[in-house]
Length: 260
Length: 127
Image (cartoon, rainbow over all chains, first blue to last red; front, top):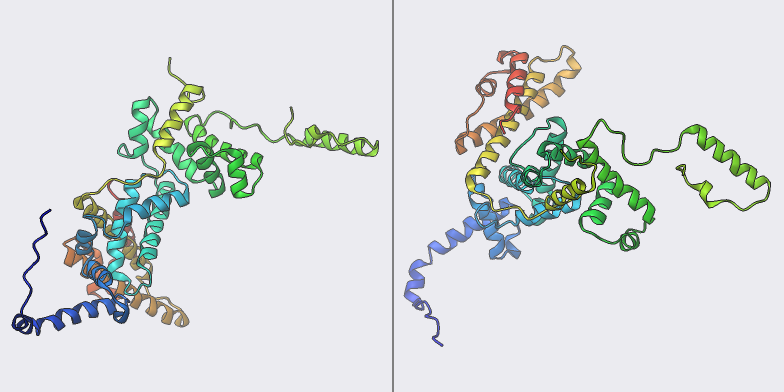
């Protein structure tokens, strides 16, 4: 195998000739690092690269962070969406996150942990887009929901409405739906992992599905069984009391909330 | 016959859509798209600054509220100047009324209603 050609070794004279330029470049890099909150004493080449990456105006920063994704924004987007358990267009979150990072690079001078800061900006982008979805819902034909719905014969606007309704549910409901329905985690495994009752997890996942279905048919009553009316409940309580006073065993069917 | 979303096959198709829309790795974006998004961010920031300028337009009548108003005005001027500087550097347009606010003292600003209407116009972003 051929050995790689090495660059020619510099002579002492050449090194001396370039010596006056070297400290100047180092000083600039150190100055930028101090500006960005990095400690030059413990610096390494990565820190210098990051400091240079985030220097300048937002548009200049954008031009450096978009090609090749050196800050790992795409991974941060996936992590943020998984964490939030929401149906949002990942590409929109990515674009918003990049713009926020570029803008924030000029604003915030010090930061201890760059990865944590990127995660924060992406999480803020998710929150911003969710807020916009509530404040000004709009049918965007370019979203992932619309693109996937059309070939399957579903109304893209209804799917978007359903996703928006799902995103408004409490996080616990969304997480249960994601785990049980979309990731196909077993009910028992999820119950063991979360320490919650399987019936409660099932109810939560069902609420997630109901939110999506209800957006398609708002005129229909909610598909889940309604809670028993007050009169039936009073009758059941009275029966239970009567059973207790008779010394009989408690019927497990009487404990259920819904009438059979 | 048009299928209802409540029948099983339609629900299965819906679940396929939802599975496809689960958090995924976004595609690689082009710099142009990111620059358009940055422009939207600038517009939102300018809209917010104009809305705040409309609120700060008149000094409060009560003397004890004046110092808080002055501090808010100083903070507003700092943020507006930063935004204007970055817009100029990056080549994005600055709202004319925002530029007028930066150039004049608060009592010479455009009317609060005009500032609020500009804020609403900038806030309503084109898709």
